[in-house]
Image 1 (cartoon, rainbow, N blue to C red):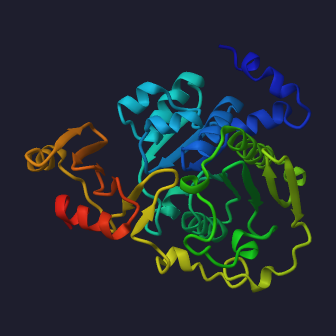
Image 2 (image 1 turned 135 degrees about the vertical axis):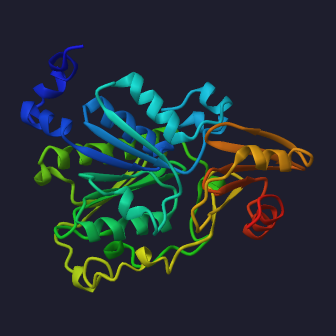
Length: 343
């Protein structure tokens, strides 16, 4: 296929042109979280002609994802493919000229700086503020622009962080929200239209940055509600408190030190808990399956092992990280992990 023909309509747009298209082809974008928002980012970046994508996600595809996560198909859910792998396979069919690196892992203080290494832009497709604060620390420290986004129910938020030239997430939100202080996918659900809007705003901001159009950034905290159709915008262009910020002012980067890390994470939209493995492991799924098979139903592929016992569904990844479905109680999840997977 002719490259000129593929991107001809985009090149006609005066904000991009041939020069901007060449910059996109030479760019690398890191997308952290390949679920609902991340699916929009990934598809848009690949179709726009971004040269390299690094897709990072800890989770696997389930049937309930298909309502809003546009990268995935029923076969991905049946095969329980990791989301990063399923997304990479789709991109190979969408644009074979885009290089894709899928990484199946939980983003933490040990690996975040390596994950964003070489990125021109990082886009947030995550579902929790701890990871977003971690991304904020790493990107501000490295001087890499990143684009925050969140969506739940029918409303969403987004802002763009350009280190040294704009407020960062900690400037606007000083502390992690308290558990239970706001709605989640579990309590409020989420609809596809808000995913499309927030993901598209983030993607447009990424294209502006990649093509050198920083003057076109919206420079605000945007909130959209598609059900009541409300749109608000807080102008951040004259934000004056950056010197007091612990990250871009004092450069303390507490999340990179691991001081705020949670071992367990309740997952958005599911009755499930993730148990993170602080060390590095490479599990032998054959041996683990042999040990678990007398106790329940076991199946595994190259990426993960699934174990069903009683009314719990335990998915174990190569690095010993597990997602335990059937409980939202971290203490119950830790007990199940210790009982069946071990330390």
